[in-house]
Length: 334
Ligand SMILES: [Zn+2]
Image (tube, rainbow, N blue to C red; front, side):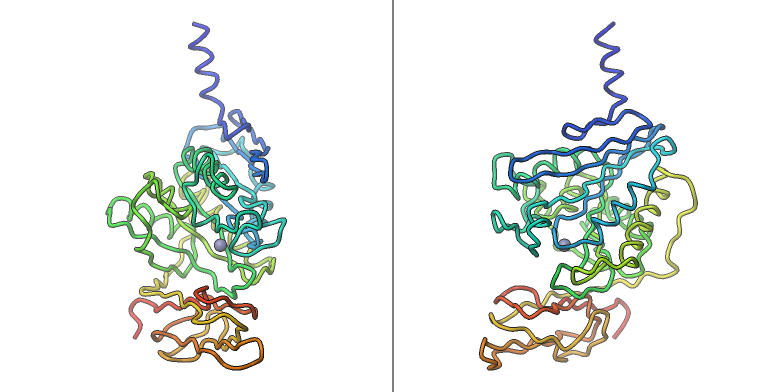
């Protein structure tokens, strides 16, 4: 009898690492990994419902998602929710405090390329492992929140993953519509192997949980508009999942980019960019050029097709094979 009672009691708790929230309560705390600490809030609704995982700061120089979750935390009342929200406030603390783009200052790895991580790996791999096992595996849906990194001038969009599994694709499509952004990049390139899922959101998808990656913000700027867009999108998804009450606002029209292409630098040197985020470009238009450190031109980077600049790197340092621009062509356009 006592054993059964204990099981029932613990079933009423939502546990993420050392953080436990009882029904109708919010709890915050950290997962400690030695070289990194992961701040997490668990909002456990008073009534049953799905669990929505939110991850900010896989890239530590991407501030708008981190600040959006600060706002969201203050808005949520566990007593009013049917279902739960798990927030990772800053996944990549070494990168956040170290002010690095792309890579961890400790192991030089890109956290959003090492999922599902390793229990006994480098610090980025251990962060990914902790988020996989404690957050993604305990969630039913996942939003991985990003923006243009410190070097990227980016227009807001989401990635709509297409897996080939019609059921999963329909659920992802509904999630994309519910988030409410008007621009979505079609992505068919994500790995199918759950043990080599590479990306945070794909780690959820390969585990049967609808997920998507959101991009809102640019160049390390903490602008209120980009932050509010993330908060509004998450609130809309919470209403779609019926975790909270109220109507879901869906966009009248979504522009889907298919194909899209990341253009990388042919050379290391100094980057000069010639376009801005959301600019329309024609095939072969000059997006950027690279010089050596004495001003001699080394290479041009041109658009592969007519399209829109989803992001352009807009700071001078550039390393061979690193991204320079992301161009997408709206489906149905010429
Ligand atoms: Zn990112």
